[in-house]
Every structure is written in C-alpha cells, then in structure tokens.
Length: 287
Image 1 (cartoon, rainbow, N blue to C red):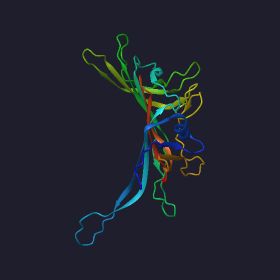
Image 2: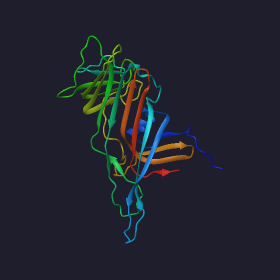
Image 3: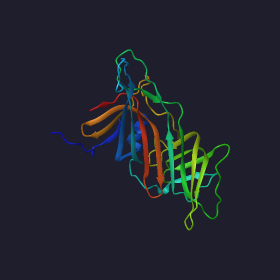
Image 4: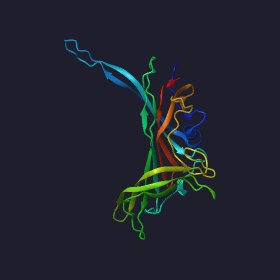
C-alpha cells in the first residue's frame, strides 16, 4: 500500500560537467531543511465555440508548460559560520555600526520557444538575457560623531562587501561601483536611530573566493566579474545544464536550468542566508 513521502533525502543538485550552477549547488551553497519549491504552470487558451445556442461555460485547452524552482540555502557549504566578520566599505557613504546587509543579483530570461516541425514536448524553452543587475541595502546605526550622507548624486563610487574574514591572504568578497538612491532613518525617543541605505550597482559586480571559503559562483582568489548564467554547455543552442530536484528516494525531477535570482542576506548573529530562483529551461522528466 502506498504511503505519503517524507523528504529527509531531498536535495537539489547539478549534474552538468561544468558551469556556474554546478559550482553554486555543488561547492558554494549548503542545502538546508526548507530546501526548494517547484512551480509548474501551463498556459490556458480559451476555445469556446459559438453555436447559435446558449453557451453556459467557457471551453479551454492547455498550452505549453513552464516552471521555476525557488530555493533557500546557506552560504558557504562547508563550515558555515556566523557572519560577524563581514564588512561593508563605501568611502563616499555612511557605514558606521552596520549590523545587516543584503546583495541581490538578478538576470533576465528570454523565451526562445520556436516551431520545430515535430511534435511538441509541451514545454517552453528559455535562455538567459543579455545583461543582469545587482543591488541591495545595508542597515546601521547613527552615531554622535559622523553625519549621515545623503543619497548619492552623479557617478557611482567603489563599494566593497566582505562576506567573511578568511585569514591573512584572501577574503571572499564582492565589489563594484554603487550609488545610494535611498536613505531611511528611524527616530524613536529613547532608542537608537536606525538607518538603512539602499544601493544600486553600476557596471560589473566582481566576486572572489577566500583562502578557505568558496566564492559564490566561481572558484579562485582573483576578482572575477559575474557574467551570464550557464545554460548551454555544448554550444548547440539547446539548454543542457542538467539539474536534479530530489523529493525523496526514487522521486526526482530532472531538467535543464539556469539561475535568474540570487539574494544573499547577512545579519550580525546569523549565518549567511541565500534565496534564489532557477528557471527551468526546457522539459521536466519526473520519476
């Protein structure tokens, strides 16, 4: 007799031979208990026929399917640690007593579904768009010695975001030019004054690994610009970055995918939390 599954053997992995998703899911991120949510939907097309008699209800057929996977994990995969040694540096802005900050990296997606001359798989096909974007926020406290800076005007300036302290040589770091278009300050009698700056990246965002901690998307202690997500490893124009979502032993979904959003969150007394979204780039095989 069948019984409900439990997902203690659940996992999210990439089985491709190379690429950023293989590194992200296999080296960088630690899969945790609230692992993933699979979202699948099909287009609906109304085909109600006029007959000259009363029509009581619409008629519909289903079109092509599409899917995404949302995941919630921890960075880094090995030896997760509280983020107390993180640091925000922005020479032209206020960064005193920072106790939380976020980094959001997004990449657009392009629907490349086209006629094939053969029976449809029933799924849309996707690839990453041309240019991504990044930004986030940091939260800090106003102090009695340093005036707050107003939202920036004009050209962006260099910002550096250290994920952790990682020894003498190299720390895992994100860096790029940023502007700060928004400032909010809370004033409450008898309490500290909390300040939040929102920032937007301008141009490349670089990342590098530390001496012992991995980078987010790539290995190596040399700063490397984050580029278009891997989706077509063999270059034939067909998504082949194979990903496997395991629900339980023997119950899996296998599909090509690429990331479209990575949101990282640092708090002074917590691990680094990461949420993200994968675009399923073609057909899903369910087992």
